[in-house]
Image (cartoon, rainbow, N blue to C red; front, side, top):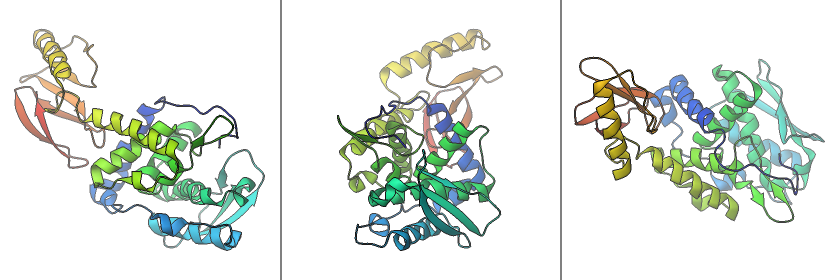
Length: 297
């Protein structure tokens, strides 16, 4: 949790790990499992006014997160104490999990839902036995999972920044949260922008959406722009002469020798690599997320 007035990191420094997290999530849950999270947490379900009892309200919001993440037998015991981070959860065998939130949330109740979204997602991933090595990457996996499965829009909405104070929850930058939420919006057709109360959160979402849409316009996808298609055609010519030559044009694609020559590239939805023959127009189907892709190889 960024302290008031502190500098907040921006941009996409963790994008590779975020994309790896999306792939890992699809691999662990399968297409059908991911599709069960078609609806996000509703704003009204996590609304928390100053008139609500602090502890009863926190337990209510925790139950919302438990239900959303399909953890029917998990009981969250929420308390507050002074700490450096926004929250902490004790990951044990269950069924009770003890969640501690920063005492700052006693007077900033609107963001309790965001903090609990992150902590309950830790429990969800613990139950799934899905983790990345290292604290940093595992926290990025947690934020990515929360956002992609419909609870993490609250984490982006908790981002506020001005000349006198700032706040951000989670390990992703605001723009990276925007990217994951945009990937979800493009997959499920659910626009989270209408829920943002923070104008800075909306701006970060727009920047993330631009990068997410760019994923869908990379060659050899047919929707790629003129510059991308020209770069791809140049690299394809080099690969036809020497398939072992490194690809320097970017875009994430790579050629593999053989007859016929093949090209691999990341699926714009789940980032799993797809392999197709080089030979003009082709329709490819991702075996992981079932996305159907129009390609011009």
